Image 1 (tube, rainbow, N blue to C red):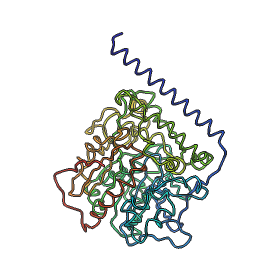
Image 2 (cartoon, one colour):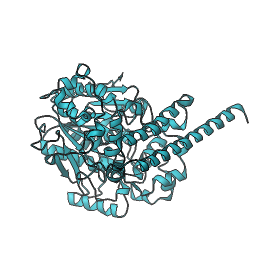
Image 3 (cartoon, rainbow, N blue to C red):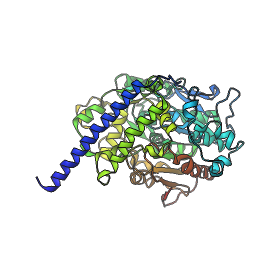
Length: 516
């Protein structure tokens, strides 16, 4: 055996030992949970009932939205005069990722959160409209990381949405299809248009849209004029019947795109906010196996909502974030070994050192949302085949194909394979784009974000791109740098673009990178 082979074998051995150690840590954490005193915290967060709205996508079902104002037993102070901002969650998450607060029963656990003194408080707190530092944040310190609350303080009419089959009661959305068949396309072409139409119907205003990860993906899909094929139907009833007929057979129709529809949609949207927007996850090529494709094609569903409602509520907050620190802290260190060239680099999507402990707890206890295995399989196809396209099982010809079930979508062939390619239609997005990228590179890398989204959209004079140093995919939207670095830049950009009465002129130059 030559030297390079021995080194490679040694590296793989070290990684195997690392995985074994990680499993041991996880099992120890589970054992610790079993020995911990049961507290039974409330699974729900305080909501203003008057802020709960629902709408129906083209296939039927119910999609829930929430209009934000700080919780009160009186009349909520909705920003009805402000510009609407509609946010979509990431995969495996719910709208709660933007709603951090202190629920009843968690006062003692979340009281440990520390805030900067008034002298070091960010300007967005000190200059908040109609409030001050003590009233807006110190009354509930968890709001310091609350994106919806930040936007509300800036005077925006904040709306949040849960995709079908995600969300905690009373905001649990559902479609008319089997939840195990949901993909990124389902959320982008059915749920997202319905949510946008509802906000438009209620407010009558142009709005900003966006979100974290998948929440940005559904936004740029919408702005491309992407929709789910409805055959020859010409009425709303016909579309619903077409979708439900296919769903009953286990078929999700193909995605299509329309340039005229894209133009109309862009005219109604002021801009897209993209927090580490999903695209091409840099996955290892050894995932491209029949076993892995068969696994992600399986109609299974991860009930993270139910786990959050029941199991996670039995775990004390300190146990929760200690367990997360152990598991992800180990992954963070392992990813840095061998100059970052190991399997752990693909799992390094959450830097816990960039997280406030109470927010670590919030992510698991309140923010997680149910997700189908096929939705993860969708990302696997994008990452391994290095193209952003519709799910490879879409269409009658693909859903029962043994080849597709065990080999995935195969080598991209846009002219002949019958799939819709989002990355081939990015130029249809003509509104201003604000992007915040993380630096760890797992799941989303700044380079791929630039190459597949920023550089391909129709550039405007108001496109901006920031790379937030020392962050990974999860914590860039929920970590310590969010209120200190991301919020201020987001606020400046929103004020600038919101002042425009029409979409800005195009430019030939895409956004340039700015480091935070």
